[in-house]
Length: 271
Image (cartoon, rainbow, N blue to C red; front, side):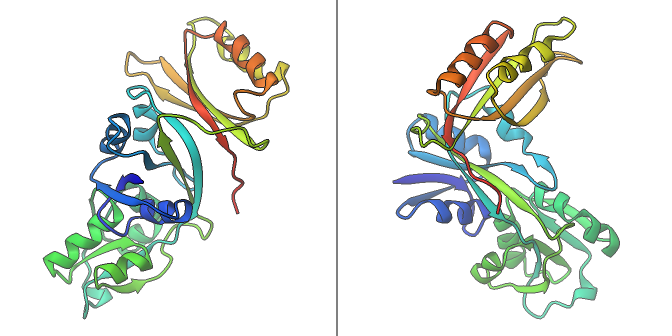
């Protein structure tokens, strides 16, 4: 079973995949767009991408790509994230001038970085940052990554758990061309746009209230068509085959200008 995810070897995406899949062949990709493309073109059966973090909120690129790709959410994975400052062997902490990692990882450690006075550099993934400093052999540059990543790229841990808060989790989703079966403890995700009139969002959300459907997340993203024009991403409890969900979605469809069902899948609770 081929599974596409952010590479190179040692990313948090790979840890998430290892948590879910027992048997798989991993295909490493440089960008989230490439993962969506792999699944759409059936080069991989599944893709693993981050969608939100407990410190930094939604991963915008993942949300935006659902507008361009006709893919579903098959499942979700919640992973505890511990960020560490990594360097090449024999590095002294006081010699570090720059720290490099994926933008999300840098953002999750911004207090530590600011207090240390480091400059920052973006990389495609935490593992990409670790690989780069290993190949460069520069003891003035550190990377942010996991303990596993440090072992893979023969790096040392200069500082442990440098994220802004001890509680730091990332929610990953599994992309597929189909969503999942009913389990009785499910979640459904949709995206929609609204007509330009007073109370449009209130009316739309009323579709869920009427059916006593529990909303667990609502996000808005710019539509890129103009200021004040937004796309809404909503997660709610229930499966699309549940009668109450069917009723709610039917009502919602009559109150929005565009709706796309991203799928139903087993719901996980944060640890």
